[in-house]
Amino acid sequence: MNLKEIFAQANFLAQCKKYGLSIWQCPQFLFLLMGIIVIGSTLAAYLIGSRYIEDPYQVALIVILITLVLFILSVIITRSFERLAEANRMKTEFVSIVSHQLRSPLSNLKWTLELLMSGRISSVSKDQLDYFKILKENSDRMGELVSDLLIVSRIEQGKFPLKKENFSLDNLIKETIKKTEFFAKASNVEINFSSQKSLPQITSDSHQIKLVIENLLDNAVRYIGEKGKIEISLKKQNKNIYFEIKDTGVGIPKADQKYIFQKFFRSENALRYQTEGSGLGLYIAKSVIDRSEGKIGFKSQEGKGSTFWFTLPINN
Image (cartoon, rainbow, N blue to C red):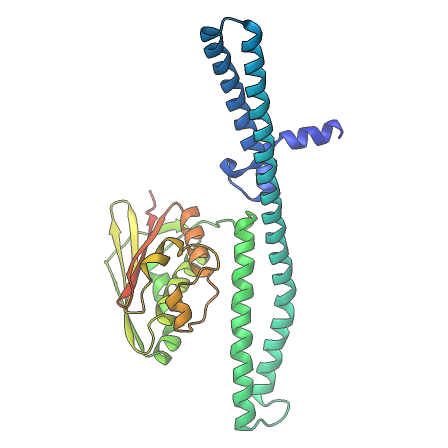
């Protein structure tokens, strides 16, 4: 190993960025931290040993043994974390590459289906049109999954930056509701929105915040079953804007609630009702809100519905 490689290994901030981890999860930083702990433990062992053991050779032997054991444990633990971090990095890169490769053929399939359904090539019978619609629905679902996978991989690689701008969250919610109205009506779901007047603007990435609202609203509609209602409210709360979405859906079992923001997690009753979803929407929502210096949470009762909320800081 040359000098350049040694310095590269010593630069734990660069290594943390490489793995897409926070400094407290980075193997190189943990090794440095454990090195400090080993040194501290060695000094403590020497001071205690020299106080209670008269023979200096015994003290030295005990200190050397303790230092050696702690050092070996530090190396083993750090190497284990490094292998896990490397496996996680490779997995994220694999997901990103596969998602990019899937996007092009899915886009081509979508355009081809739309062209065939339009009847511009040849006349399409009703039965053929029904089959094309099924194909289009499934290709759209695949497209949504690929899009979510790409967003998750970009978040984990630190390549999903916030493009901050001033915007009205009230207007953004109205646009999102309008976009979801057809899906809600088809599911026999009523959406009501109430907002305080003259709410101040916020500074964040409007595209990413819209993604959060879309995910929360989409989940609310999907998990309502046959008929229900969604109440969305927006208000000022201290120095924040408070968003809340309440549904009358299936709710989340208490045992599953601690996992709800994890990647790919779907609660048991969601699988039981055979609702569609990738289990990535809430993970993406939490990542975006956390990076926007806000907070997100929920309360839910199985069989009675769920209420999700988030806060975002108001412009100073």
